[in-house]
Length: 322
Image (cartoon, rainbow, N blue to C red; front, side, top):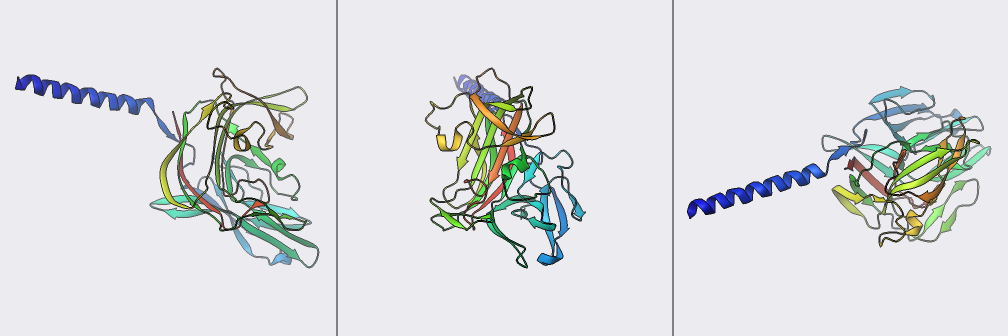
């Protein structure tokens, strides 16, 4: 009798062990390239003398290196990440913006994304104050930036990708500004209030893109994950967010203002080398395979030049779950 009970316990334990192993096997977690945020390029760029001539640190996520001088940056070492840290050359003046920073965390680093005001004042020649949100995204920036008009056209959004993960996983921390409304500061017009609080956000779109004979680029939305952060919070590790596939408009989680097709106008470079908008024209179906992945983390949700100074989002260990 005792032998039978022991045997049954052993079998039950073994089955539970095998079940847990199979559950683990069902979900494979992979670090996204450079998603550990431990490697950074430090670009040391001297701004024009007419605006002070200071040397600024402009950070990029890529194999650790120091680059001195005002050379344009292209993604290095296979890194898929672009940032809102840029060098601009406007009216012959070299100016930088840094709103993404490496910050020590444990044995390595994380990314800190800040929403802040950036000003240039030059003897009455140029007088620009812009709101700059901190943002990291899969893609590239076309440097040097030559003006504040149509900032999305300066970005190539998304990188080639053909897998179908079930979730995006990462560590995060949030500090919210105490402002009830946002501000809009584009550089040349008056700074104005924009109703509503400013929220940091995490976004993932899987797209199936194609190009017509005229160089226009179209896309079907294959997978969607968008989340806003509404409160300050200390570090949350291994937060996982489901990637929803196909037409999600009937799902209870669907929020049109965050997830609809063409919710933002993103650009890419077509086969002719032109920066063109991506026309998101349809939802995918379950058989569609993506061609591109667009991941973005941002300290402000409202688009270019809109936000609340004081918002910060920290991000680390960006992974995909399969």
